[in-house]
Length: 248
Image 1: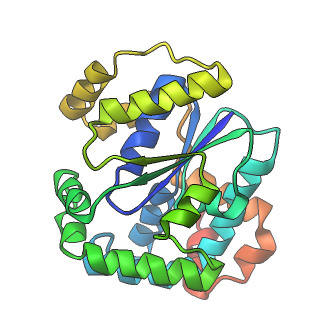
Image 2: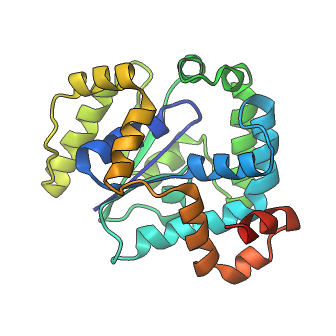
C-alpha cells in the first residue's frame, strides 16, 4: 500500500504526512523538503512572494522531472509502504487500487491562520497570490485544475475538508478508511494524545524519529536518485540547477 497526500497551500499536508508516516512506519517523501533544499542552495526565498518567485523559477523545469520521479515510485509495484506528499501526484496517475490518494482542502482563512501557527506568516499574507500561482502553473504545465472540486473528487479516493477538524479527527477519518479498505491498522490509536505530542514536541521531533528508523530520505539523497534515474533530463536543466546537481 502507498499513501499520497495533496492539498491546497496551508491545508496541512506536510503535518499529516509526517504523522501518518509515524503511525504506519512507512517511508516518507515530502516534495516541499526537496524544493526548500533547492531554494536554499540557490539563495532563493521560501516564504511569501519570494516563495512564489522561486517556485515559478524551478517548477517548469525541475518540477517536471520530480513529478516523473514520484510517478515512478507510485506506479512501480516493487515500491511499497510509502507516504508521499505531492500537490499533483494523484491528478497525474488517477485513482489506483494500491494507492490511498488523499486531498486536503480548507477555507482560505483557516489556511492563513495555519501558516502563521507554522511559522510562515509571510505565506498567509499572500495566500491568494500563492493560490493563483498554483492554479495558473498547474493548468499551464499539466492541464490540471488544482482548485476545481469536481476534478479533485474524480482523482482522489478520500477528500477531506479539514477547516473545522482537529488533526486527531482528520487522522481518525484516514485510519478508518485504510482499516476498512486494506485491513491495515496502526499500533497507535490515541490520536488526541498524538496531536498533543505533536504540538508539544514539534515537527522536528517526529522527523528525527523517522530519520533514526531510516524512514525519511534526505533531500540530497532524493536528488541523487533523480540524477541517476533521469540523467538526460537533469542534463537538460538550466545551468543554475545543473550546478546544484553537479555538487551532489
